[in-house]
Length: 344
View (tube, helix red, strand yellow):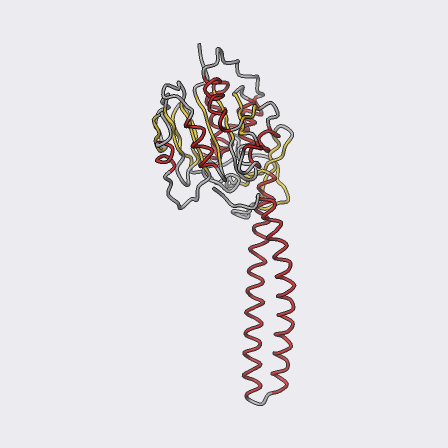
């Protein structure tokens, strides 16, 4: 009788401690493969496998493209690659970032849902914003089990809260009990049949799966995914298409960058802040240059020119002060929107 044999776990800010607590309770004979993804800088190195290896009784290894899925094994995502499952094997997708991340939890969970259907178990732990919520919805759509760290137990509750909003029937547990629930679900008596999914919806899911692998996000007939919106992609500045999915709207551009509405708003806030800092730097340079030119003019007896440059310096200084006040307000807004942290 089939059982749930693929567990996929996504975590972000605060995720190292949560993952250590979760894997500590998994038995060495767990008859499932466990995939673990933590948001990582694209140019960084990860020692996550080493950290988990010291606390886990299962075999822990870094993800290698093409490796088969092995029961009793924890596979850890690598920087700058989506950790996915395709045709029963590990696939490292080099497609565009999703919600600003590669690896993306949405891409990983989507692949698990399409690959294993009701045999998949999706788990969302502590983290910022909402990466993983759309992916967990797909796990539920194809009959998989959905588990979430209790928001009250999470160091950063945003990801668990969004996951529960996306899948209200998902079961939530504190991290100390979550590993027990994973074991119970894997050893469940039976796996329900995969629910009926319309061809249209499944086609959309497959396009997004292939996009994370690096293919263009277009349907087989060449039509783009979704309908054009009035928004630009923060990463490549191309037009974002609206993708309607289960009553929610997500966005994906022609090159494949994908955003939830929440993540898109947060990234737009970051871009506004960057633009304001650039403008402030230019204004402060204008103050300094105008004062310098005024000093030169005054030393040469050109009082009128000196007065003109002093006036320009005063105007730029006033604009800089106003902009600095606006910047501090913007920084506070971005911090509140992101949970006052930027990653694990």
